[in-house]
Image (cartoon, rainbow, N blue to C red):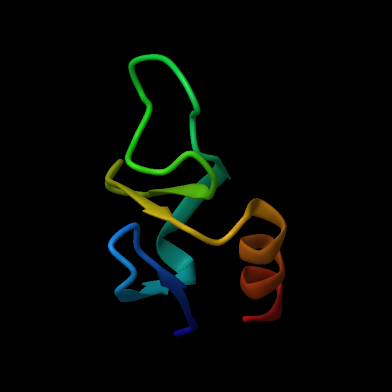
Amino acid sequence: MAFVTFTRPDHTSVAIRVEEIVHFAPVPSAGPLVGPLTEGTRIVFKNQSIQDVVELFSDVLAQIDGA
């Protein structure tokens, strides 16, 4: 079971189980899905919950690929 660690918008750490990730993308910067971050990555899980993290898309991809 592989975990990766990221940073939440409030700058606390969160460990995410890689197997639970469905997809991820840059956080929306406008519209109804906009969140607390202007830059970062939105991770979507199998249960359709989301987690925004401050790490950029390329950094998230590298950590997940390395897990």
